[in-house]
Amino acid sequence: MRNTPDRLLRSEATRQRATFLELFLDLVFVFALTRISARLIADFTDGQHGVYAGLGQALLLFLALWAIWSVTVWSTSWLDPDAPIVQTVIIMTLVGAMTMAVAVPHGFGARASLFAITLVTLQIGRVVFFHVAGHGRPDPQQSIRILFWFGLSAPLWVLGGLVDDGTVRGTLWTLAVLTDYTGLYFGWPTPRLGAQRLGVQMIAAEHLAERYQQFLLIALGEAIFVIGLAFSGSAFHTDQTGGFVLALASTVLLWRIYFHVAGGMLGAAVDRSGNPARLATDMAFAHMVMIAGIVLTGVGFELFITEPLGHLPATWLIAIFGGPVLFLAGRSALEYQVFGRVSRSRLAALLAFGLLIPAALHLRPLTAGAVAAVVLLGVAGADARRSRHRSPETPTPPY
Image (cartoon, rainbow, N blue to C red; front, top):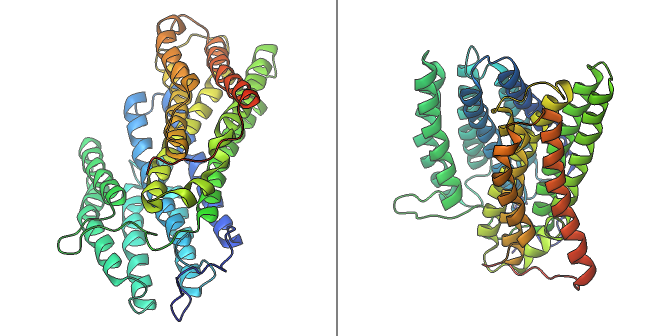
């Protein structure tokens, strides 16, 4: 497809690698993940909001930030990231996302209105700016679709940020998130205009794949940050050192499981897909689940490093077991999206976590972390054995 006169659309000659400005944007989301992780750690240890309420609040904040990042990635995989208009939108996103990240620790308290108003201003403002600065190109109808859906969710975000009741805020923001993600997933279906996902014209597969891989590495980096922070503040006793080593080993296993075959073949899968826009959307949701799992796993690392041999509250298993479960669930979805099947080892690991919960309730935190690491090691080992006995696989997306 040819570019528009102001080079908004990508061409075949456009480079596929992420630009330095895009990588600069990712630094903001590194900070955002650390703030979400810190909120969760406080909820598990201090009981400031209650574990379940804290999990729900952190999830809503995470989903709002992930939606911003996802739309930005799809846009730069469809549009030329070197075009001045696109670069301006990325900078707008950087400033807005940083403001939201700063508000995260008190995102359900004193800074709720700042978080919500910044979110709405950013989501609507960049669409309007792009439409005006681009003189309606390349697709004015897509701007209308997106603005229609943001118009539905914006009042819910703003009202939720302004009310004083936490329960009401949670309800309004849950409805807002559901509205935003319904629009994202179905391509913003709008009366008379129908639906159309971003990038349906052309997606730079290598660029999109690289961006997903980079963000997952960011999440792993955030987990390493949590590990280092927890251990550096400890007394360096033998049990805490064991927790430190175990957490690092578990992080390596998460990296290995993700990049084994499917995680490294995202670009080829998008290229071979008959519906690349839908595959890109589904991959975004799979990565969202995996990254949420990594963040939660990092919280579990903090818990068993700082209190390795203490009492294990039942809620701590939400992080120690629940984080790897979320990661494996998202990774199983990604494998299906790339190859049209799911390995039995991943399904067996998910079943194992469920069966081990009753016994794990009687373990020490460090022992529970070791059990989770053994399950992950089993998945990684099964992947290695499968690689030795099979010829290289070719992506066969189911759609």
